[in-house]
Length: 125
Image (cartoon, rainbow, N blue to C red; front, side, top):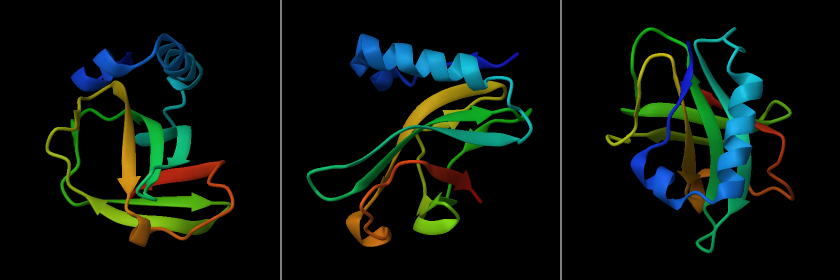
């Protein structure tokens, strides 16, 4: 059965409102296991360094841990690729049957500027 977990720094830093939102998204999407890995959108933003921040709830529906070692992530909007980057994140390991929120940061030179970044889809290739 799918479980929601928070990485330690997230667990400490999350506001009550953000936690409730993530818990709601988890409840609504935890049975969507048509894919092995599903990244469900939480929020998109541009930070002060003009990096694109894509926050998602990563559902690992597989029977093995998910690690990010040169994992290629693609963010697209209506089929158009907006950002494409390989991520190596030794601290991020998502166990089997676990869902965890995470923010992936695309530096300003790794994405195409848009008026809006909403309604996008993040995929692990």
